[in-house]
Length: 382
Ligand code: SF4
Ligand code: SF4
Image (tube, rainbow, N blue to C red; front, side):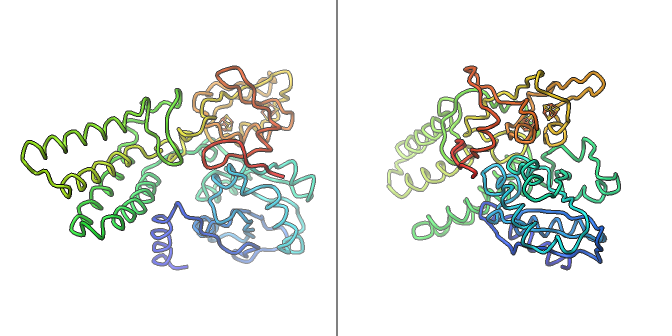
């Protein structure tokens, strides 16, 4: 694929990021692989497949594309839509077993929340190797003899990703707003779209300036994608805007329904934009609508055998393992995004989540029930 086509696909699929984009599953040959070439696996979200193919350019290897309902790796694995069943299915049906002599498959690290490496090994004889978080690090990972350094393990929220998220927010919101006002205020479409795009970019580009003020703790009110903050502060803000609109209309004798409706709508869109679930739109915070953001990762040191899987799959580098002293600690537990990957992969069930009320969420439950859209552990993985 040439660079222009790749750029256009990136632009379109970034604007439609919230929508699943499934692509064909199966095996893709990259370069001239032989029977000892590495085998990579990813989900069937089209943009991810294109990015992984680009990262693998110049290598001789196989890329397996497994079913994830057209959703990206982390979201699909966390939501129970990209599981060991999907991995085993593509390993067994794609014909890859006839193409290579080894049985090692490299998976994206962020799939570790939903794919149990142990089950893949038990049911298919394939050994799972957890690759880097970002596809761009694959060449360095291969050069490093399949070992990951901290940079390859940790999720960040760099400038380019923040721009992508701003576009992913702005496009659907401005499109919906434009459709809603099209019959009444056609002339407002351009200024309102400019406001929405400008605010989206402002919110995401300024993220590093207010990141430290975001707190995962405390009760919030919100539904699906909106988080109205503590005590519904954003709704109160909209109420204040409405007072201003009515006050202005009364003071300047502009009391006509059109004026009031128009400004009520504009202030509502502004309020909703500031109420979007920002934490859920970043890879460095758990969605503020998810109750399990309040859970604390905990370890039972009597069970831990310092196997190190937790450190290998944690996208926030929470762990410290002292193999000489046979000791595992979680010194950076505050950075945890409650993804559950470490719990799912720990072979000795030494990890679990603890609620603020002392309630324990066992490894069995974390493995079995994935999160639905509103952040409840309700989706059962068979
Ligand atoms: S907690 Fe589990 S995965 Fe982590 S080092 Fe201990 S035994 Fe290994
Ligand atoms: S410590 Fe937290 S962020 Fe790290 S893998 Fe475990 S649940 Fe995920």
